[in-house]
Amino acid sequence: MTQVPTHVCRQRRVILGMFAVSVAAVLLLPLGALVLALTSG
Image (cartoon, rainbow, N blue to C red):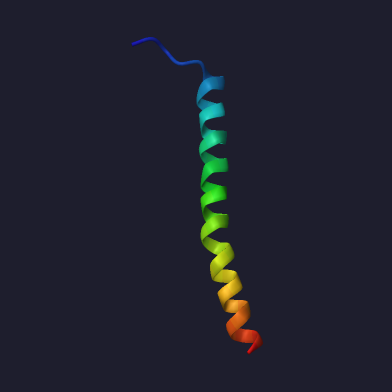
């Protein structure tokens, strides 16, 4: 097993972070819209 360069790990972490942010946005946007619809009456 060859040693992985640090920039590859950092890039993978950035990609995972962006993926997590996009998933969170997809999950939170409908929830926020529902809360706004309920609170606005």
